[in-house]
Length: 276
Ligand code: IPD
Ligand code: CA
Image (cartoon, rainbow, N blue to C red; front, side):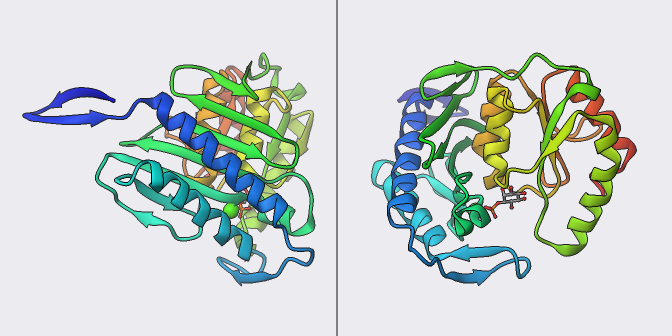
C-alpha cells in the first residue's frame, strides 16, 4: 500500500500489482465456474435491452462469485457489474465486471466467451484481466506495464494499410441499432481486407492486443465490455479511442495501432458511425 497526501488527508493508494493479481485470480475462478457448471440445457432467465439480449443463471452466478471473491480481499471497494452489481465503495477502487462476455456464444457452446475484470481508480482502468476459460487463455495488463497473454508479452500488429487490415466488429442487441451498424459495415467492407464478428467485445480487444486482427470498432459498448480489454489493447500498443478526439465509450470504440487507427477513424467519421 502506498501513501500519498491529497490535500490535508492521507489517502491509501492501492498497489496496482495487487489489483492485477486479484483481477486475474477472480476472473480465473469465475471462468472455472461457468465452464464446470455450464448446465447441459442452459436456460435463458431474462432478457434485457431486446429479446435477443439474454442473461442466463450462470451470468448471475459468475458475477456473484466475482463480487464475493473481490470483496473478501478488499471490503471497501466499489463494483459496477453487467448483471447489477452497483456499489460506490469508499476506497477509490471500482471493479468493472462482465461475468460472461459473449453470453450468446455461451448459450450455443461456442468457445469464444470470457470473464472480464477491470480495476478502475478514478476514471482510469489501472489493471485488468480477461479470461477465456475454454481455451485457457488469460490476458492481463497493468497501466504502463504492457499486455500479456498467459504471462508472455503481446503486441498489436504493426499497422497494415487500411486496405490490408483485418478488422473485427460487433453489433448491439437493439434491432434499430443493428440495422444502422449493418448499413455502416457495408460501407466499411470495400475498404478493408475482411471483417470478423467473434461475439465477445473483450476478446475482440484482446485479439487486437495479440495481433489476431489488426483493428476493431464497435458502437454501444458498456463500461464492462471495455474496461479490461481496452486497457489490454492499449498496453499492447494499440490506440483505443472514439471519433474526432473523443475517448472510447458507448458512442464508439476503435482499437488499432497507428496509423491504422487514424485511417479507420476517418472512414468511420465520414460514415457517422457514432450517431445514436
Ligand atoms: C456483448 C458482446 C458482443 C458485443 C455486444 C456486447 P454480452 O456482450 O461483447 O460481442 O457485440 O455489444 O453487448 O452481452 O455477451 O456480455
Ligand atoms: Ca455479459
